[in-house]
Image (cartoon, rainbow, N blue to C red; front, side):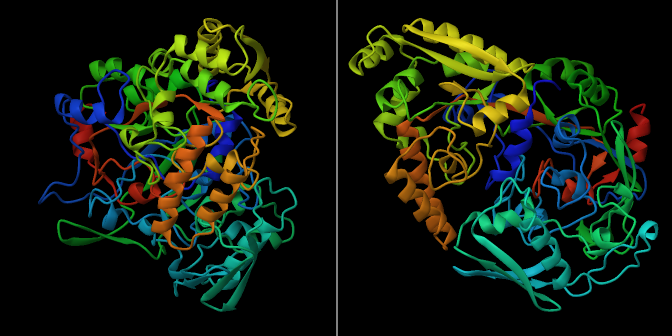
Length: 593
């Protein structure tokens, strides 16, 4: 899986909503074209528990999670939830937070269908509510969480921890330990501290209101008891010290091999209703998260049913998988974390917006997507089509629409008008050993040469590139996978002095003011309205060239029943679906597995 790199690991930390499902034919299309062509595709039938079909208990589910592979390949699997490199998808099976997961039974395809839960990163708070807080209130200065009474921590004999009730004191400890860590690379100024008002009431104090504050709970603030950290002689980085309240208990970890879990018999949220009948969950006896970072090995494993499900398959594997595995079920969705090209905006030549817009038009985004991914979504930057703050292309300004018109003649004219009739030379940095990045860079070099712009590529190791970006020493532009395209203002905040970072060095008071206004808006619907306007303004300034988001699949075998094709119900977490599905052992045997 050399194609992925550390920017991807970090990107999940700074997003604010999901990417939705998308249907399209095997070509690069716009969202409007996808709708027209959807009828021509064979319908994907999602296997669910049929009427009258009795769920079965027992069996093992082996589920390949893409983000676990990224963590394993970069920083290694981390078990201490206070560690800022820890990826929550490893922990969601046994730990929970105050807000997520999303309520898939109420809002997902098995419910109202308001939110499909079909991509990675996070769920808008309005669709959450299945966490350790039964309710919460938010003001400009505080978040008040009402803890569910009777939720029990699972026992852990290894550290001598006996099962006990989860309380507001536990929540305060978990949050404050995270906030007080001096190594926190994404510490946000809007948090002050967390205080237990009583046994079941937690108050989180804010220095200033920010719409991302509630989302931070399921991105960062996983809950764990103080004893996992304070018990003498034990290391919270050791998987054997883990304790949670979730549906499973971590029973084994083999480095570079797999994580294994068993059901938690004392889980508080342990019922689901199927065909009008209530059942105790989880149904399965064992959950395995395999660690297989090589992409070709992943495809071979899903093809031979060594995996029951895999959450990320690139479009190029579709035909061969469907030919060799006609029973395999495919669900199409837009992958988050498109590759993008931030431009250095505080010095020539990209200090002029006219130059930045010209280079947008000098870049054939559709051709790049077709060559690299086979299928992608064009209008996916700075927010994807399914994000709540996305605006259809026909509703955008003429300036925004023009950016996507690949036109070398017009680009040359714009450069000449901006004072560069003979073009210029720039340095573009990119990470070493990443196939997609290298392919995109080569195409950019060729395309920009046609308008008189020479691009010198600077290939560096991932850690070195990260350091260079932090020091603003990456040259004139760099290729990045950092930051998903689902967040309402995730990319707007990365090109503003008022945001989370400003690697582009774009100094725009209008943008700064608009970002602060949006993020400080308490009413969520008004926030989304402001975010839409903000994203269009960012796009007009063209500080970053956003390439198409790849479209691909998640795949699963039809013996997974009561599974409706959701991908993520929280933050990089399929666990809300896994704890409700059951394995049709007879069907699996019938199919020869």
